[in-house]
Length: 145
Image 1 (cartoon, rainbow, N blue to C red):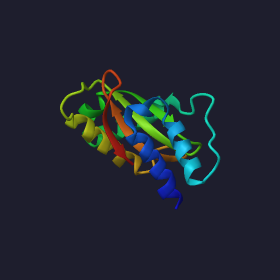
Image 2 (image 1 turned 90 degrees about the vertical axis):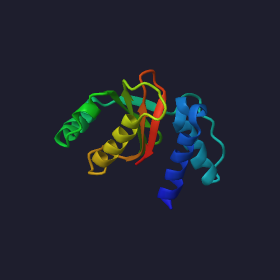
Image 3 (image 1 turned 30 degrees about the vertical axis):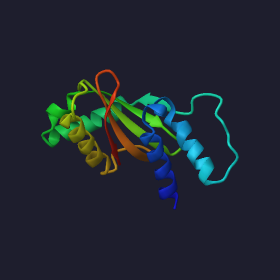
Image 4 (image 1 turned 60 degrees about the vertical axis):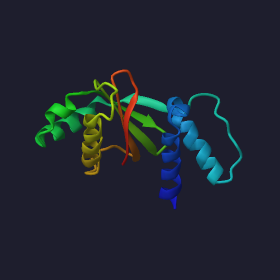
């Protein structure tokens, strides 16, 4: 039940697109309050926190290089953890990819990251989604983990 509710809330926030992009954590919190039939608790500020994680990025790069995917991970400029709740987070990979008609590089990068993370290479909590962002911060690919 917890997986359905919490996973559904993070998925809904992700699907809200640009409407929720700046503070997906607020969307998740609102969804969880709604599911729990809790009183509406409007946040006084941004709920979502973004922190860079260079160490996690280097671990992913090392793994990808052993798999022969060095060229792919060389496009990644930064990895950010987007904390949605105390336990749930999304991962954003900022790349030098340009927005184009369906960038296949961003999709294969997301799938590689999911494969790597599935081997318990993440951090405490539950990773929900991987987002691959383009050179100017636009969302290229979003993949559920």
